[in-house]
Length: 438
Ligand code: XLS
Ligand code: CA
Ligand code: CA
Image (cartoon, rainbow, N blue to C red; front, side, top):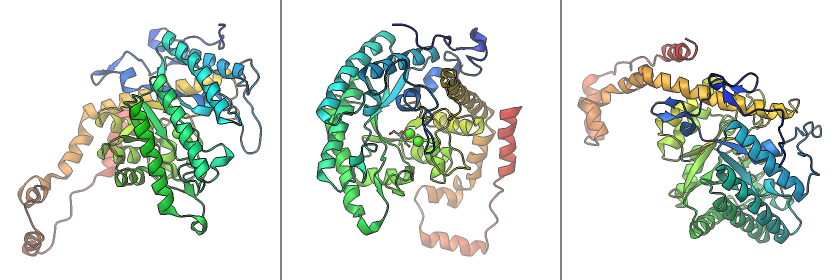
């Protein structure tokens, strides 16, 4: 098989002989940080849909990039060329995992039987590549939002027939995920939401979404899938109201329907900011609930109100992200680059620049997070901030040994409380800047 990205070298770190512009500046897979190799802190994954599919189309214009890989789009020959391109791309970057939707892999046919036949054919080919390279699946998913039949959602559809098709796609996507050694399986509720209550039974729709997830868990476990299922929260786009608005909403849903033992969350940076949260907020809410599973490692644009899926370049945000991940003890999933080049970045070289940027940003974030942890001032400050709860009445509160009557008596004894100690936000931000910029 001939080389597809022939002008691009294997990407190495500058300390390891890599030369500009195709070299990592910060990512060194074998470098040990906080007792673990960088590549273990950062299991990176390629998103099949963006990297091998997205060609710059937007609502106002057609493709700018050529993602044909020398074949006619919409054919099985093209599907195979995407496999060749994808594996060569991942090998050149040292990316160990990929993520996919079912219909990223093959052109979808009108009849699901034919789509599944095509999926079986491409799966054989992908399995050969997995055996040759050791690259495997981080997570798989079913695209339950592009086909017009999913106009009202999949699990939350108004049509029992459509619900069956959603179930069939999930079943097949789970089969493929297991065949590709997947660590996880994602539910992003693309159109699981609604536009108006005038035509919607919210309670019924949410129950149906939960039933579909329960059936997916039962089927997955029956075929030997031992990984995590994930919900990927997103507040809007395409629907106005989405049922998986943010981490807290998704966690409440999973607990209500008894799905929390099998599911964790896949937190996307861009979705966090769309929900009006920071990326690190969504990570922290997931982590403190034991639900931090995987990350879609991209970045949104706060000046735009939609999901721009940019390659992450904001080192401050990446540092805050890595602080959360390291403190949580790492991910069971990984860092999936659900990111695409900007429309004018339309060349093959840009595909590599995007990944080098993303990988370097999170590597630098890891180094800075490690430096903040080793510095210790932030952690110490937070610990000491709550010191009044480790002695006297504070301690009795935490130990559950007191009552409202006793606390009330204490307040009456004091007459008026002292102000809490300063939160020192500006001082703490100075520490972060000092660690980031020296
Ligand atoms: C869309 C989502 C999607 C999921 C997988 O906004 O990010 O790409 O990650 O279905
Ligand atoms: Ca995503
Ligand atoms: Ca997205």
